[in-house]
Image 1: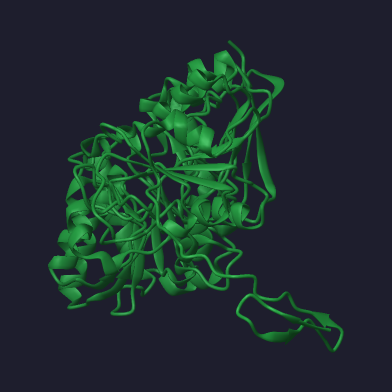
Image 2: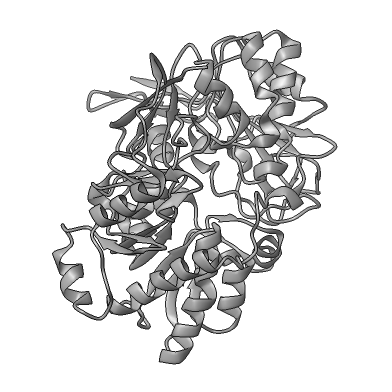
Length: 496
């Protein structure tokens, strides 16, 4: 069959059994501003309604204002039964508790730090909180296990079309590494910024092709509060001793070479390991290849001192790191590249060594970072599982007890990271190697003193006594998921 199209050409619409639609005429696109004057208007434009899932990133950490602002707007619109799919909540998000009480929020699938977790531990939501690692969240969104209706993305600078960055502007917090899957897979995307610039925004972690609305607010947050807790190298001799032991173990395992790829976190012990590692590399005249993960000023200083060739970072932990990446944008990586196990390759799989913390560890090398020993849900998973599974030497650091609470014990309260991907527990009373790592034990030989995990537990119990069984109800509060989507453990309600 032949017809004349709008361009005046006669074309065939049926060829070899396939149908083709004739050209119907072109329309000149007229670019329009996506700026709207309030979060309420943006949410209405995106069709917000009861039961939807809203997502957020946490890169402003305890300085974030956007989650609270958005939920206040939802309250004013009368929206109920929302599912929060944030990457993390912090103390600044305590107002979420009121939104839970009022029924604005009834589900949470994302890390919880502080008062909201404490509240939920005693007042379970209608659905259990689902905790995923950074990589697990990314892959859950990709495979639509976690479907996002509206992604609300805080940015420090944006243009009127929605191109946006977190690296420039008065509220700069670093590269937007956590919201790429939200941007690509959410039904709607709202950009929230306090700095609108002329088109085009110079750096573009968020692209206009995905964005529905841009909202300008007075402030998206306080970057000075990206630092949560102390980010200074500790003076505590115990913590410094554990940090040095980690570097000694890396050395004994033969990892301190020019090929070293490593990750050190932002906890006190991890920070304390930085000068020890730098000193050891200097003594050996070694330049490590790559550092990955979150970035601190101390890692930046180590890089500037010439003790590593490259840095990959997925978030900034202090304003010094923010300042550095704003002038060195090629050093970043998104979380999918970093930790998505459903992808064809991720950075963490190349790690030689990583230092991670713990709330508790047990004789099976399981690690808990989500709940305290009293059962309260106070922390998220972060990249803990992702890094532990990828690193050749995963070191978990902790004292054997804190105050009168044993940290090395028979069974952790909650399994966050399973023991079969943990290689060493490094404590103030010695280092225990997972017996499954016979290759590691062989590599170390007699170059470093080791102790069994059972001996560490016995020492902890001798100082604190055997812990009493927790009193929990049968009501499910939450669950920890492994990054492949399977359930690792359940978290139950704490008795008031």
